[in-house]
Image (cartoon, rainbow, N blue to C red; front, side):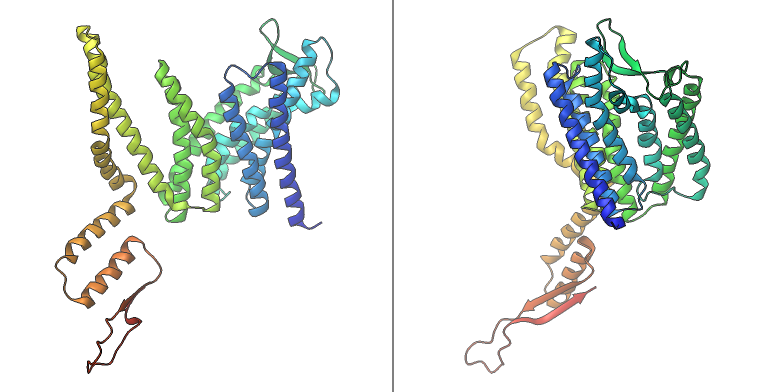
Length: 422
C-alpha cells in the first residue's frame, strides 16, 4: 500500500471511530438516564471534538506534513473511545462487578488525556498555527522543556494505581477501578508532586504561546495575517464565553451559553478555513459585523435598562407603559445606530470595505460632471482596480451604429473601444 493510501485509510478510521464512539455514548447515556447536568453543553463538546477529529483526518490526507493533523485526530478519537467505555465500566462497578481488563484498558487514557489536551490546545496550537512550525528556531527553548514536563506528567498519571472515573457513585464520590498498567502506590496525577511542576510549566507555556502569536501576527502580512485573524476570532469567542460565565445573573449565564455554543465548534471551523484558505478574506467582514452587533446590542440594552429598570430602582415606578416606551425606543434606534456604528467599525476592522465605499462615493460625485468619455473610462478602470483589486481589468464600449444613409461607415459590435488596466 502506498503512503497516500495508508493516510487515507488512517483518516477514514479516525472519522469512523469518532462518529461511532460518540453515537454509542449518546445511546448509552439515554438508556442509563444520564447525560450530565447540562445535556446541551455535552452535545456542544461532542460536536467540537468530532470536528477536531474530522479536521485532523482531512489534514492527514491533504497536508501530510502538518503536525497539527495527528494532534487533532488524537484529540478527537481518544474521548470518542473513552466516553462510551466509561459509561459501561461505571455501570459495571455500580452493579458490584469487576470490569474486564479490556474495558479498563479502553478507559485507561482518562488518566492522562486531559493533561495532553490542555497542552495541545493552549500551548502547541498557538505555537504551531498556521503552518505547523514554530515562529523561529529560538522558540525551541520553550517548546522542548514544555514537551518534556508534560510527557513526564502524562507518564506518571498513566501508571497511577487506579483510574478515577468522572461518574459519581452512590456516596457522591468519583468511582474508580484498578489500573491494568498501574504501579502500586503511585497516586493520581493531580496528587503527584509532578503536578505542581507541570502546572507551573503549563503557565509558562501559555504565556510563551501568547507571545508567539503576538510576534507572528506583528510579522505577518497577506495570507498569514488573515489566517491568524480567523484563529484569534474563534479564540475571542471562547474567551468571551468564559468571562461571561463568571458574571452573576441569569442573563449573563444565557449569553455565556450562547457564546460557548457558537465558540466551541467555531475553533475547529476557523482553523479549517485558515489552513485550507477557503473564503479567507471574509474574516474582516465577519469581525466587523460581530463587533457592530455586539456594540449595538449593548447600547440598546443600556437604553432599555435606563427606561425600565432605573425608574423602578430610584423612584419605585413600574409600569407597562415604560416597557412599551423602552421597546419602541430600542426599535427606533436600531437602524440608525447600526449604520453609524457600522461605519466606525468598518473604518477600524474592515478597512478594505471602508476604503472601497469611499472610492465609489468619490467616483459617483465625479460622474455627474464628467463629459470626456476617455477620461471616464480610465476612472472606471481605476475604481474597479482599487476596490475589487483584480489582476486585470478590461472595459469594452459599444459604439452606436451609423444610421441608414449616413456617410460614416457603421462600426457596430462590442469591442470598438477598449481600455485595459492591469
